[in-house]
Length: 288
Image 1 (cartoon, one colour):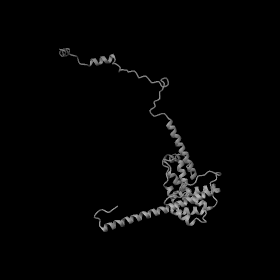
Image 2 (cartoon, helix red, strand yellow):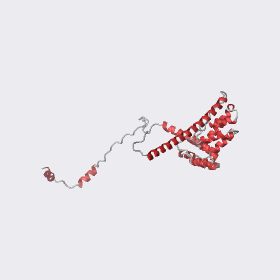
Image 3 (cartoon, rainbow, N blue to C red):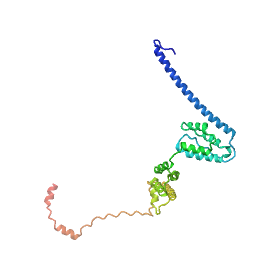
Image 4 (tube, one colour):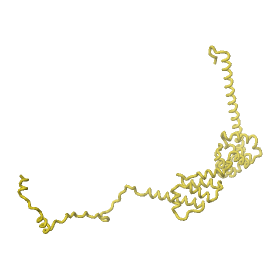
């Protein structure tokens, strides 16, 4: 695009330098993207060659591979457990330890793990066993203080609106890593129970004394609450008015009205005797 009329040599030279700088940045970015594409292509080709050389056997137990790991610390144990189970159950699909490592790296993706995987495949995979790979994987991405993490999780764990079964499962997943003794674990477990469940357990004689007994008591209490709620829901509504038969529940008749007794003749005579004489002229004047 030509420069506008009146552009000086200095302005044109400055504009030219800016365009060269922008072009250099674009070329640098394209080069970086090309390198990343080449790395992904190499990883995909390596995995494809291994799969072609070692096709999956149609025989053997069915099992699922691990989920894709993107760098989350909370997913490390799950990835290791699933990868170990898969390679153990499908051991016939792998001819050597290096093949297991390459297979596992195909499930590691994301900006937080790509550089580590690339360095592993390029420099350290030779002679590495699968156990060594998992140990290095845990060291790089795992929790370096699992006991403290478990204690923080269990101290803040509450049942809330979830079921007792879920609360017990979550509590058990952290309890073995805390280092707490049974007394401390029982205290933490009781604190996290919902109020209805806790009140029902404390309302019965003989409180549980072990953590396992508290698990069972909490599950029993929730079953009782659910059963009671079912009975309440099945009961007739509160506005229901029962109808009773008159023969069964007779309604008493209203008492008869009895006016006060009249004065006796003797009392009437005494009363009349004490009254002053009536002047007929008074009534006559009034009537007139």
